[in-house]
Image (cartoon, rainbow, N blue to C red):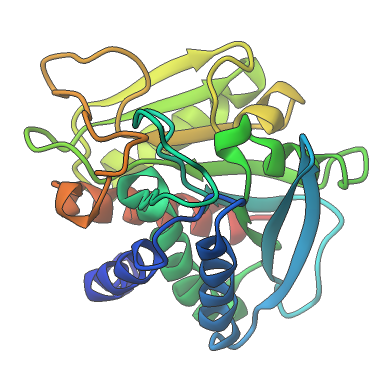
Length: 288
């Protein structure tokens, strides 16, 4: 099943997302990116796709929410949510103008967004085997402090129907190691953290090291944060959240106009992160 993920499709999606010039919600390229996502998802049988509108400081945001329901319809709880933000920024470039200047966002977060598109294709083909709803959330406004994810969270009924969140963010830049940080939130996310670690070993995916890193507040700016802090089990896979170490040399083009396709230096890691997410999603969505 994991081998159904197609690296060529990942590359094509990334090129298309970077090709709109910028996915900042104030830039004309943002709507082009949204149209591309909708067009690609519209080609997949078994998906229901809708836009969710929000605002952040007067800036319009658009989440794109795709759902795959099991043959018997959506259960009331147990939902599996896979998330990636598709917006981009280059706010570390001096003089950068959000509405006018490039923000290619290849690694951050074209990689995660492309992975989510490919996960949608593979998971939709497995619909007959699912017992839980799978939600694929293409969130906007993460670069504005996860405003899109927070806007989606407040639309959910309580008790929350979502049982697990896996967030992909910056998973393709590391020239020296196939390593990721596994961010987890509060004690309620510990079992999901352990499931991800076990799946990496069980399916011989080969992310080494996979560093579990606790996040106890919203200063860890990832789309998993509002869910985890609300008590929903939530984790994020990210190439590094924190300072450099011996397995990660840093990402000097992060949040600059130079975060382009050429700086996605570890496509093997990118594919491994996508495989790990698929493995965990299938385990969860096939369980009762």
